[in-house]
Structure formats: structure tokens, C-alpha cells
Image 1 (cartoon, one colour):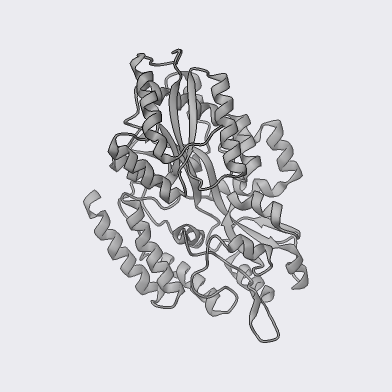
Image 2 (tube, rainbow, N blue to C red):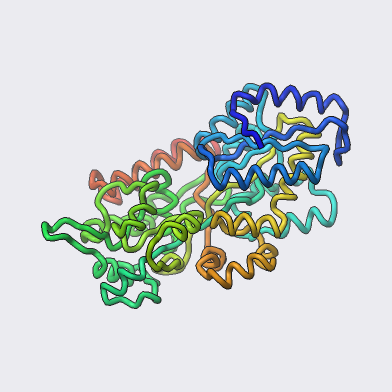
Length: 434
């Protein structure tokens, strides 16, 4: 399927407007296909875009009254900016996959409509109730469902079994607690003849999404960073400060890279044995399975007072300024692509967590999980998972936390001071929403 750019929206919107003039509503049977522009957050081509293209083409083949057109809108951050810009100019996409944490921002901008408007039949209600509850925490607010889980994830731990053997550790036994993680990382850290570290024991990235990786520590230390309404945060909670201190202390112990660690290069560092243990998304599972030239393990995040990890990833949204016919068409597409067989295939192709138990009950995902048990770790972690940090004015609030985390990790501020200042900034931003 030919890919379109963001700038082609004008043309496709005009086509959609023609579809509206047909008066099509409800189930679609118009002669002229209803155009559904679908923003998908990936900057370049490759296997994922091919899968999305194939899904769109297969849906259109089964539903000739609807034409779904994927538009690759860049990174998550670029996609939300483009989607909101298009919304404000009156030419939004009909649907888009955006971060689940963008929910409050999209509601505040009056950009999206709740899915409850389209759920009418018992089958619709069964479908809406089929998603894992952990994924719905960042999908529902005010008694309404604003997002549908699609490419969802949790943070998991990957470890190099060969390096575990070399360090005298059991390669089949992952660290299960903070204390075990620090002890293992100490044994795994290697230095060359000049005294320079050649392999870090553990590496937790802190660029891009530092707040998300930090939630693996704050959650396992028994702290929640925000309330469900997205109107208050607890960045200066003593448990949060203690979690940040643990992260900082890994660096001070010389078993974790100093300063800010790049998100994008962390899997590569793992491939090159520059890091023996890494924390990253289960969405990297297929990438690591393909590129790691050694035996590796995938485990749940080590706990302290409890186990846990934040969920993450993207949800489908339907945009408000689309026509009723387009919105209904988008709803039908979203229902179709999240059916168990397709959710299972998406999980196998990408490494993301399939969004429903029904997907894991399909023959294809059962067989895949039996052959590759690592693919089930993120799913098994869901009962202990918490919502990803999401508030009103989310980007500014998470920036306040990110700045504080990086200030502490680079040694410019103490964890306590950094979190106190992040709390003050978040309180100032969120004052308007209380």
C-alpha cells in the first residue's frame, strides 16, 4: 500500500468530505469508500510499517466501503504534535495510535471522542471488556473509555546468560530483588587493563522516557507517582526519593554507567556486551531476539517492597472533527485489528504484549509462547503492573520529573532536592486542573 505523508491530509480529507455527502451513517454501505486516515507513530519504513500496511489492506479488502490509509507520522512525540496541529486546523486524522499517556491532553484539547458512543451491541460490550485491566488504566477517565489498547508493553529485564556464567552466577536465575540486582551487577561489571569499564553490570536508560524507566523503581518501592484523575503527583514522596537514591547509588558504585544513559543505544550496548543486564520495553523483544548473538533471559523487574512495572505503549483514539461516518468506520477498523487472531500476530511480529487473554488463547500465540517463553514474561507481569505516569498537561509535568531525574543522575542535585523542585513545578502546572 502506498504510504502517504502528513502533508497529503488535505487531499484525503476532501475525499472523506465527499463520503460524508453520501449521507452514510452507521454500518457503511456507500459506493464511494469512506476514507479513514490513520496516523501511526513510526518515522521510517521496515517490518512494522509493512505489517500495518498489510493490516490496512486486508481490512479494506474485507470492508470495501471503507478505505484505511496509514500515514506514518514520526515518533510518538512528533505524532501527537502533528495530530493536534491537524485537529486545530480542522483536518485531523480520523484515528491515530498515540501514547496511552496522551489521554488527558487529548481530552483537554477536545480532540477525541469516547469509544462508549460506538459500543451498542452485546458483542461490542464483550469486545470492550476483553482487554487486560492493566491496559485500561491509561485508557479510561471520568467513567468513559477514550483509548483502545493496541501496541502495549511493560518494562522488562534482559540479561546475558553467557556473562552470568563467566561471573559465576546462575544463568537461569535472574535477580529478583534490588539487593540481588546490585550484587549481580557488581559481579558482572568488568574492566579492561587500563581500568576502564568494558561491561557495565546493569544499565537503565534515562533519556527519552526517563520517568517511565524510573517507574520500575518507584513502583517496586511501593510508590505511585500520580492519582487516577491526573490532577496530582507525589514526586517528593520519601519512597520516590529513596527509589531515585537507589538508581544514583548504582552509578556511584561503578556498576551502572554514569550520567544520562541513552534509550536508543541501550539494546545495542546489550548486543555488544557493554551491558550485562538492561531494563527496556518488551517491545524490544523481537529486536533483541534477532540481534543478540548469545543466549539471553527475560525476567520481571526486580522488586523491593513489591513487584511491579509501569505499562506503556500506544492506544487507538478517534478524532472528534471527523465525520460520523468516518468515526464509525474507524471504530470498525479498531475492532477488527484488535481481534484475538490479529492481536496475537501483532505480538509475535513485534514483541508487544497482546492486549487480551483471548489473544493468548489463540493457537498461534500458544505455540509461539511454548517455543519462546520469554514472550510471556511481560504478560505475566501485568497483574503487578501500574499505570504509566499520566496527568493533565502531561508533557510539561513529565518534563519536570525528567529534568529532576537527570539532574540527580548527573550529580547536579541530590535526589531529595531534585524531587522537591520537580514537585513544585508539577504543582504549579496542575493547579489549573484542581
